[in-house]
Image (tube, rainbow, N blue to C red; front, side):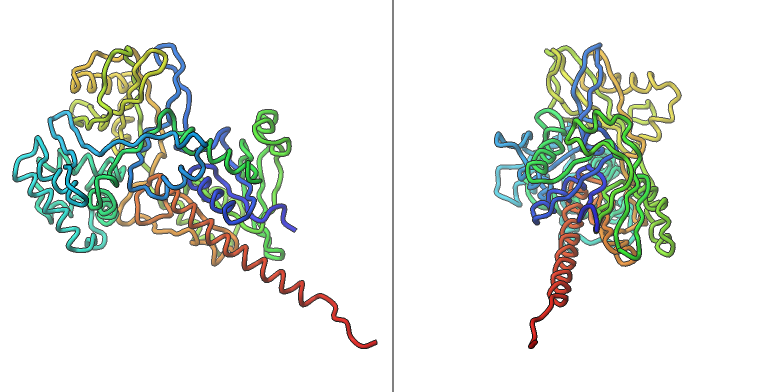
Length: 485
């Protein structure tokens, strides 16, 4: 008999989404993660700025109004006081004077009016922008297969000035991939659900403090209150399936700090060793999922498993800066990227006041490799600080620190692997995958992660119901029937 009906490996946003969905379906999943805290790559952490400890996120993860599944999940598990988020009307402001704000007209004319009245763009640029979006809408938001964003921009005759000032930063912000490599169809999907929808879909949704309070911690509290089990500091080193019993065996490394692991949730969560389950949802980044499955020695499905290693990754850098509290920052603003002067900062977000300091976060996405190629790490950070100071006419910050995630996201190219949550279920029954790389319609986003987790849980729950029904039928058939003596 299995120790558990279903185990979810990975407590990032995909794994949390899967565990919540399974619990809603009446199951009591076990959720494991190697880290000391849930949230995966979208979680809070403590850093030191100007000698003081500040609570920030491990990266500036953007949520917009179009992330319907993410917002629904946040609302579902929120504390009685409500979700720890604030919504702000969409507006695109840039340091070069470009301003795009929605008009007061009803949807969908609110965004169209905003584009037509955009400040800082010439009449030719405004017309080219609206023509490109209208062309996508006319073609049902479909573009030729294997086309890149750069090729699509040429096809729709977008002026180079508009590409540099609008399309390039928007592509990098949403796809984490430069236009010359980014998948045009995925970009069209993003535009369809944001600029092609309404101003509400484009609203920015920002944490009131850190992402921990938005989903990871409320979701864990919600799961524990409903009988689920959370096991942190639990590294799964191999995942094997016993063909005879059909059970999955999880081989774990002993917890590095058993006392902390046990104290976090319950006394039985700290031990290493094995666990068995009827079904497993593997909600890990592709490289980690590949490692765990490869260690299991699965024979024929090895070729399919190897596809998890075909994703190419991009680093993302977030530079946190601290100024005196009386310094005013825009809520968010597009910076002017200038590679020739090593100004790689793309967006600045105001992260509020802490420790009598104003905290700002600058994002470097799709240019992380170029940023990291600079020899002097301290000079890299200082250059971004100079960029912000120069372009926003601000004093130099008191301190700055970079948070680097070298495998933060996959390159969203037309030829990337197109895997689904059931990619291995045919060869390896009872195994489902989850993660932002398993929602091919979208790039690597929190919404893709949440949607994949919910879908993996739904198909897993359906399989559990079929197994329970079969088991009940077998029991019914095996029961003795009274006959004549």
